[in-house]
Amino acid sequence: MIGLYAIVNTVNNKSYVGSSNNIERRTKEHKNELSRNKHFCKHLQNSWNKHGESLFQFKTISICETLENARELEEAFLECFIQELYNSKTKAIGFKPEEHPSKKPNWHMKTVCQRLTDDERKQKYGGSRGVKRNSKAYIEGAKKRLANPDYVKKLSESCKGKRDLITCPNCGLSGGGGNMHRYHFDNCKGKK
Image (spheres, rainbow, N blue to C red):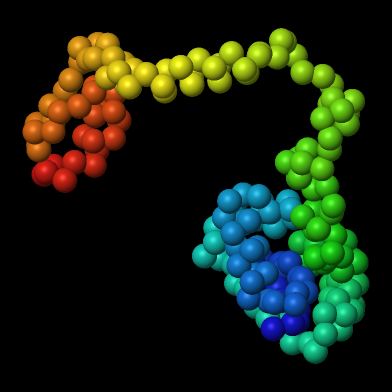
């Protein structure tokens, strides 16, 4: 529903006015930002914090056919009543989806790095720090270990007896101390 909406403080009748192409979604966004203390309008946020959510009403002022009509109506409303409003500007700036950061070509560092070659990345962000390891030695060592069928058995035997085993008093399951304390005791099905 496209139109003009208001967030009204019922204590002093001061309001915040805005326009949107989806009033219900936009008022939910305002409510969410206000309850998280992250709203961009500091006057409205301070009043919300002082009086509480229960003393604010979200109202639809007018329904319009297009967003441009809603913005024009908002600007006219702001020019007439700016003294009684939380709004700080008389212009209806509004949210423009085409200007959202996610619509910009390099909005996320990961996507920027994926588009750069190694040389471009080094030039832009600097070379690597430290010494690069020779991965061939690690690959060869892994191949030798995996080729030996007794390797897993030897590793398992060498680890036995190195950690304390704990038994759950509720279900009798025993396991390593760290994991039992961290996960099992909180989620034990035999817990009363």
